[in-house]
Length: 406
Image 1 (spheres, one colour):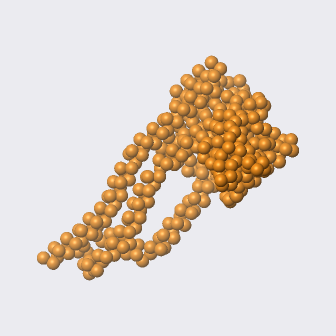
Image 2 (cartoon, one colour):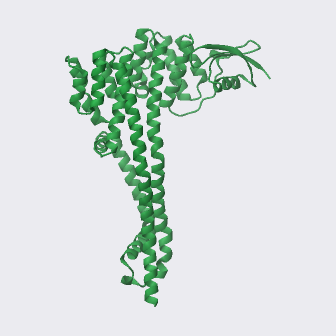
Image 3 (cartoon, helix red, strand yellow):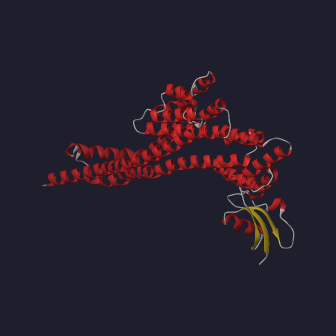
C-alpha cells in the first residue's frame, strides 16, 4: 500500500509530521481528519505534493450554513496557530472543502486577501451569513495582531450559541412527535374507525346519545370532505408561515410569545444570554463599548426586545453608566444588573457579562427541562382523552342499541 508523508496541525495548533499508509491521497486526508488532525500537506513518497497541500476533493451542492462557518473558522484558527500564513491556510481549507458553496466562499476570501484586503474586509459581502458580530471580532483580532486567538474565542462563542440552540430544538422534538401522533390518531379514528359503525346506528336518529351523534357527524364530514379539510389546513399553514415571515407578522408573533406566562420568561432569558455573551466577547477582544453594544443588540432575534435594548448605546454615548441604562429597559433582573455593576467598578465588564451568560444558559436549560416535564404528560393526557371520548361515544351508542333491542 502506498505511503504518504504528512504535515498536520492538532487542535492546539501544534504541528505534527509523519508517514501513514493509504490507498490514495484522499484516503490519507480522511484518515488524518478522523484522528482529529487538520491536514496541511500530504505528499506521496514519490515526492509529488498535492496542490495546495491537500487533495482537491469532490464538492456537493447546497448553501453555506452557520455550521459550515463554525467548521471553517475552527480549522482556520488551528492553522493560524500552527504558523501558516492566512492565504496558505485558506488554500488548504479550499482543498478540504466538501461543499461547493463553502469552497466558493473561501476562494473569494482568498482572492480578496491576495489582492491586499484584510480578512474582515473580505468578509463584508458575506455579512448576512456570518453576521456583524463575526466581522467585528475578526477586525479586532487584526487590529491587535491576535487573529488566531480571536478566531479561537469566536469558535468558542459560536459553539456555545449552537449548543444552546440545539438543546432547545432537541427538547422540542418529543413534544412535537406527541402532538403529531395525537392529531393523526384523531384523523384515523374519525376517518376509518367511526364510519365502520354507521351501518349499526343507521335509522336510530335521536335515539342515539348526543355524544354518539356528534362523533358520527364528525366522521361523516371527515369522510366526505377529508381532502378539502386537509387542503384547507395546509393552505392555512402556508398562509400563516407567510404572514409570520413578514416584518409585521414576525413582530406580532414575537410580541405574543414574550407575554406568555412560562415560555415568555424562557425566551427573554435566551435572548439576554445571546446579548450578554456577544457583548462580553466583543469587549474582551478590544471592540469599543458603543460599537460592541450596537452589534450585541443586533444579535437579539426578538425585534421587540431589540428595540428595548437599542437605547443603551446612546445612553452610554451620553456619559451614562451601562448598568443604569440596562435597568431602564426593564429586561434585566437584579442578578444581571449587580454583575454588570461589579464589572464596571472592577474594570472586568467583559468577564462579568460572560459569567452572566453562563448563569442564564443553565437557567434556560433548567426551565426547558422543567417545562417539558409538565408538557409531555399533559400531551399524553390530552391525546388519551381525545381518543377515549371517541371510543366512549361509540360504546354509548352500542349500549343504546342493546337497550332498544331489549
